[in-house]
Amino acid sequence: MLIIHHLGVSQSERVVWLMEELGLPYEIIWHRRGADGLAPASYLALHPAATAPVVQDGDRTLCESAAILEYVCHKYAGGRLTVSPAQPNFYRRSPRRPILPVPNSRALTSW
Ligand SMILES: N[C@@H](CCC(=O)N[C@@H](CS)C(=O)NCC(=O)O)C(=O)O
Image 1: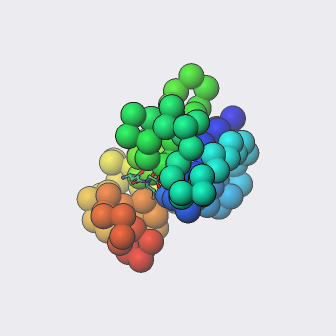
Image 2: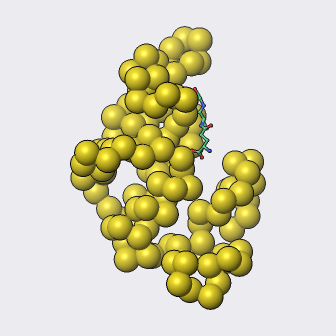
């Protein structure tokens, strides 16, 4: 089962959203921010850059939200909610593709 290392107020919410949307099981490990708003030491230990999200799938650890979402859609949902490189619209923006390699600030408004 996918484990989402969840850091509040971060893009790990994208992974939670996707798992709920696809109806897939997952486990959340919360890493609560300190009073200073910074990620706790437990999160810093997961990733050299300490950015969220980080997920674990068995002995595989993944980071970068766009890559994680593609991975989940293809590995666990038969390509639902995304398109594969074999499809002609892969290189075009598509309203069905929730995970576009666009700057973070645009990611939620471009589809
Ligand atoms: N391109 C990365 C960006 C990850 C990123 O910058 N995450 C921010 C939160 S949205 C982060 O972890 N910042 C450190 C922090 O909030 O403590 C991705 O999409 O996963």
